[in-house]
Length: 445
Image (tube, rainbow, N blue to C red; front, side):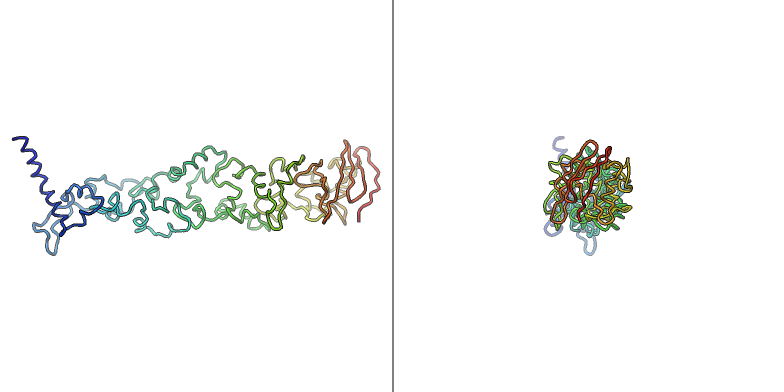
């Protein structure tokens, strides 16, 4: 008798709700509820009276409602779900208690009582302005509508409802980046100290890599001195203006090399200046100039092209960092050879006689002064020296300096206290610092 009584009692308690559920979703009353793909648990259990209570005996009630909710939303939802809105940042619908602005009460086509699936774009843009999300270049999650990959839909301890600290949210996906950055010798300060959104728009941008501004403008917002130089320079380095711009030479996040260069300075420069067809007319292939040479100019020996060339912009030809005459003949005057004299002895060309400023002397006679200070045909450094590399001592050119269609041979020989040369400019002449040599020099016209 007892075993029969308990099931009978359960049936008497539950039967009304089952009956209600069966009658609610009939073809003539609420047929769509029964056809919902993913149903709210009370609907699935047939327990309409968890949320609804009958207030009038007659149902349906003509011109009115015979059922009402057992409590108002969100209190109704909180009867089963944990109450929300306790964290620092609360999503507006949650703050307003408007659960139904996103969730369907009975059931929906997808999880969480949402009518949208993995692509949440339509749901979120029902409230949020769509323009910031629809620019040419989109962040991956935005492109597929995965808003909740980064944002909590209800509440968060972080700004913008982020699921964690901004930087950590980014690095949870960009794991390869995080690993490489951890091992990097140098990290760009904004990457180390600021959120990724200092430079990147997290949703979409009109610029590659969802940058907030195109390079170099973005970079120059911090690197103001370079900005001034680029604004005022007569000649700009082409990579600053084309392609990836700053990113042509610099790694924007981290690197092994100084200046966040993508490699050592010399290699970065030769990536471009190691070809035969760079520029119009083509510039010299510097890689070929260096290959197999026994003597390298000091800055190049140290891997520093920037010893003579400014990598961003300059007022001087070939992006020189100071004045250097372009022509074969340029008599010396103060300041005209500052590019070379910034490293070499600054008094090298000032005095006709010296015992200390140069070893290129015949006795005390300064032969640098003799060659460069000629008022009519002062020879520039290029008349004898090559700027990058050569097989001759003191970078004196064995092939000869370009003089129109002809390369002027130098035929320089060095001795312990002097030397000699037999160039196309004059017959063989000798010099000796200790025992001056008498030379009758016949100059070329």
